[in-house]
Structures are given as structure tokens and as C-alpha cells.
Amino acid sequence: MIRTRLLATSAVLAFATALPASAQELRIGYLTTLSGSGAALGQPLTNGWKLGLEHEGWTKDGDHLGGVPTKVFYEDDQQKPDVALNVIERLIKSDKVHIIAGFAWSNVLNATRDPIVAAKIPLLVTNAGSAAIAGERCSIFFTSTSQNNDQGAEALGKLLADEKIESISVMVPNYQAGKDMIAGLDRTLKGPKLIDQILFKLGQTDYQAEISKIRAAKPKALIVFAPGAMGISFVKQWAASGAGKDIKLYTLYTVDYESLPAIGNAAVGTYHTNWWDPESDNPVNQKFVKDYVAKYGRMPSHWVAQGYDAARLTAAAVKSLNGKVDDGLAFAKALRKTEFPSVRGAYKYNVNGVPIQTFYQREVVAAPDGKLKIVVRSKVFENYKDAYGEKCPAAERS
Image (cartoon, rainbow, N blue to C red; front, side):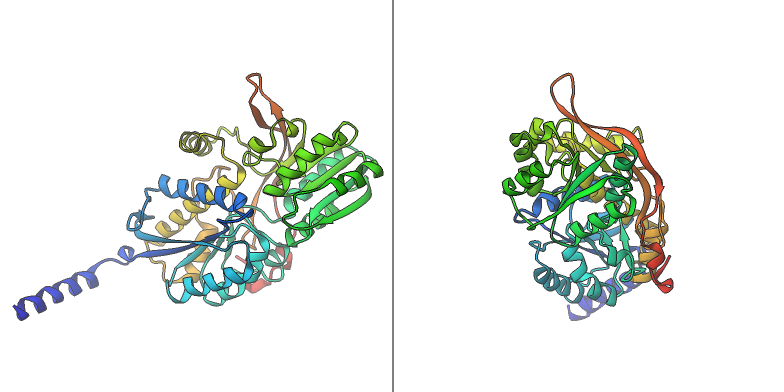
């Protein structure tokens, strides 16, 4: 009996040794905000990520992704950098993941970037994108499927300059992404007079004081960046105040298909800039929208699209490596160089891992059937690079 067991064990070991490298297990750490108000971003990112995995044939641990048996560790950072750091340490040291994806908020990304890069693990970001990490803290291990924070603001600045708006006020939350938005506007907003720049508390939901101040200042337009629950509260209060009758409202990552059902008709007639065209005839995009609506009963947002693209990019990169995912640097380079089925069509990366892509002017309208839609009105930038590629250290460029 003992001899039989030894022979059986030897046979298993020999078989395992004989397996090709592509048969190893791929372990993915997925970190985002899944609780609290920050989950308004983290949950749609995760929904898109899971749909992308599903379209690649993965629905549960052990299923193959890119030809490799794969396990995904889902983690909630609670929008707290200290919590995220503890999770990252566990993912690296205990779970021994090959790649870490996710990241909804820039403050969390900024705090966790260093230990991930030090461990030489690919960092695939589905939303957050700060100026520092695209520039001076750039790393070859970083790749994004969203945009740098200030690119949407740069597009909006150009749009308002082209429309010859005479004067504006700006409102952003007082954290990294808000400051990046202001930097982006400063870069392209030429002509309009800046009347006021208001920083409000991250997570704030009562804006009566700010709205009163803006009405008294009488700008021709207001630009507001207020993602998640912040934006829902602001736009509804703005509409209720009647300020929109005299002041045109432009938003940044505030009005989208996630927030629109809660905001309702208060969003009609508002404009914003974004990289995603919901009605694109790209077959990948059409299937993405159709399957998401069938699964969740509502339109996906660009947040969902970013998560979706990250999953499909991961699968394509793994496949291009023939499943050899132990080499973190090779994996990171493959993420930037491998073509994959994206909702935005084929695109390339800037030297710092930020997508080079088109930005659109979009408007919220009421369709003939009464439903609210987000429609593209024009292209503001085409094949647009972020502003930080040249600040990326030469050794970290791809």
C-alpha cells in the first residue's frame, strides 16, 4: 500500500512537472471601493470587470483566462489609503498575486503605488489617474484603461474656449483628482474670465452655500467635478435652486449613466466631456452595451466600460505570454503592447501607460419615449495624449 501511494505521488509530480508553463495558476488581486459612498464608483467598475471576464470565458475561480486557470481575490479598500495598504501587503505576500487591478480613487492609488511597483507586480488601473503617477512617479509597471484625471478637464477647457464663454466659476472636491481637474482646465481654458474657484469637502452632499455664492457672482457658466453621490446631490440641488436658468452647467465625471437615474430630469441640457461614445458602432461596444443592459437592466457608464476593458486586456496579455505570468516586467510590458477587443476600438498607449484616445462633447437629452440619454455632440480631441508623458523618467517609459 505504501509503495502504491509513493508511485502515485511520483506520477502526479512527474505530470505536474511535464505540464506546459501556460498551465500554471494566474492569481489576480482586484482592489476597489465596495462600501460607503465611494462604492458609487467602485461597484460599476467591478460590474464591468466581471462582464469582461465573462466575455473571456471566466466566471469562477479555476476557470481559464487567457488560457490559464485563474483565481481572483476581490478586496474592498473602503476608500481609505491605510486599509488599502494592508490589503496590498496581503495580496503580495500571502496571496502571491501576479497582477493587481482596480483602483477607483486617486488618493488610494497614490498611497499604494510604491509597494506594488517595488514588488515588480503589474498595476492595472481601471479608473484613478493622478498627475504624479503619470509623470514623476511614472512606472513601467503601471497601465490604465481609463484616462489621466485632468484629460477630461482639458477637453472641457477647450470646449468652453471654443464656445467663447465669457466667465466661469469652478467647483471641485479638495483632493488629488479635484486639483488635477483644475490643472487640466488651466492648461486649455483660454479666454473665459475665472470668477471663482471653490474647493469643497470630499464626500460633501449639501451645496446650498456654494450655490448661493455662485448665483451672487453671476458667471456665465459653472464647471463642477463631483463624482458619485456628491454629483447626484449637487445637480439636483442646482436644478431646484433655479440657478441653471442664467448659468450654464458643465460637469466632469458627475453626470453619467450611473448617476443619471438618481438625478433624473435635473440633468437634461447639461454638457460634459468624456472618452466613451455609448452609441459607437464598434461591434465590441455594441455587444458590451447589449449584454450589460440584459444583465443589469440599465445602460452601462464609462466606469463600467473601463472595468470591462481591463479584464479583456488582462486576458489578451496573458495569452500573448503563453501563460508565463511569473515575469512581472514582461507581463507589464504586454499590457501596454497587446491588442485586445476594447469598447473604444483599437488604441495605443502613451509612454507612461495612459491611453491615447478621443474625447467627446456629450449632452444629456430626453428621448421621444421620455427616457434620458447621453449623446455625443462633437469630437473635442482625437488621439489625445495626456500632458505628463514627457515627465515620465526615461527608464520607466515603454
